[in-house]
Image (cartoon, rainbow, N blue to C red):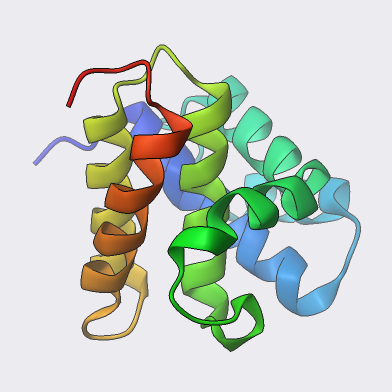
Length: 140
């Protein structure tokens, strides 16, 4: 199966946001580490860099945007779930050209690959509620 360059970019950005959340290291250092230790030929590099840098730069704003839809305290989130939700929320508010269904589906796929057993269900539920507010201009 051929993996799309944007999907690979989301995977790499997820790894970067996760690493940043756990280590607190400089995001440029994390980005460089990811770029030098992974095969980035099939990655949409500009999309990867934008997702990674913007998710970290806007993390507080993204957390506030998604908080009403969580059903639990943000600090109770698994770090992978938090990273996925930050990336997906960023796409919902910043990447208007990407249909919300694509954003949600990609977040679910990331949760299935990297999250706990049923985290994809949680991610789906949160984003399904959030999209009604964050993308109210799109028809559902």
